[in-house]
Length: 177
Image (cartoon, rainbow, N blue to C red):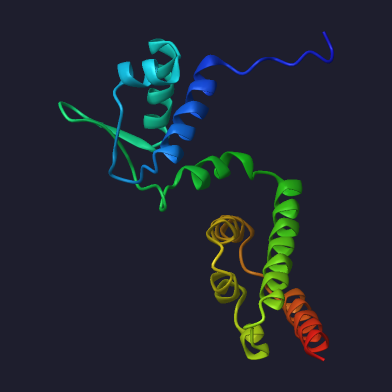
C-alpha cells in the first residue's frame, strides 16, 4: 500500500476547527470557550470528537477546565511542552551536530532580519546573539532560538559568531553606501 495517505483523525480535525474558531472569535488567555455541546453544534462535529480534542488540548496545557465554570484558554507563552518533548527528540551525536547547525542558521537569519531593518545600528551587531534575537521582535524566532540554544549549549570559542557579526556589519555597511 505505498502511496496511500491516511486521512487525519476526527479529533485532529476537531482541534483544527476549534483553533480556527478561537482565532475567528479573537479569544485570548482567560477567555471561556463554548461548551462541548455548543462546539459540537457550532462546528458540526460529533461530541465524542469534540471531547477527545478538548482532552488533548487540556493535556497539552492549552486549556483548563474549571469544575462548575467551564473551559478556559490558558496563557501558554511560558509553556514547557516543547522543551520537554525536546529532551526525547534531541538525543544522539548526530542530532547534537544538527542542533548546532540549526542554531547557526537561526543566528544568521536573525542577523539578516536586523540588517534588513533600517534602524539597526552597526554598534548593535556587537551584542550577544541573545540580545540580537530579542531586537528582531519576532517571538517565534526568540522561542525557537532559546530552545535550540539551550540544547546546543554555549560555543566555546565564539569564532563562528564573530564571523557572522563581521559579515553582517559588512552587509550593513555596503547597503548604506
